[in-house]
Length: 272
Image 1 (cartoon, rainbow, N blue to C red):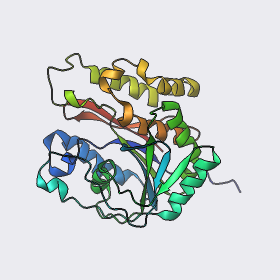
Image 2: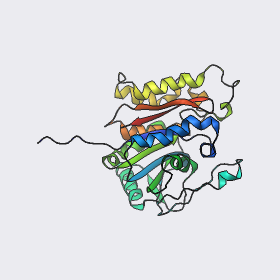
Image 3: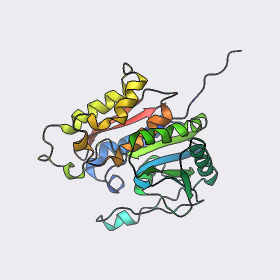
Image 4: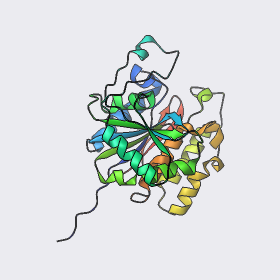
């Protein structure tokens, strides 16, 4: 009897939008909100979720490890309703410990954190995707050094998690220049679209060799309008973690979202 093919859990890089606006009915987020609600219909319901958010950086890789993390309203200047949003997903201390062990086994300095809560890079997209908040979740930090190669290594250290029904989510934005959102005067040469085409090609083109694909991601600053689209790269680096986790088994991603969010072209990628 032939062996059944190996099935790998999906890895998803998605946009989480501007603060709490996606769940407050902002029209600039309508296409993104529709995508987040629909993408779950294409995925098996996960037993647990590991999310890497653009809104958490530490000197060493850090994992939320409490049984019931609180949420952090890590934004300001929004209507009162923004500070009443709830998302009471349970934590998963056992999975957090497993992530810690896998990182340590790869020589990556890591720690567990029982005090930190989930930030809006976690609870905003998950409130739209899994509103029941019953799937256990853990969150992994970025590294403050913002080194793209080290973030790919973070993902590679965790590839064995794909052998189980654990959904991996990198939560960021493929375009993140706050000054230009909704602006028709700052960035009038379609810089967002040019960079987006480069990013889609890098992540999805089968003609690009694995070595070249990784080098492009490591040297992402060489892409057209890279620093215009990402004055600071924390919203791009969750993609690098996703790529590192996916590339050995699923080297090429699918573009599952490619629309305007707050007036700028934004993409999401799925490795499945």
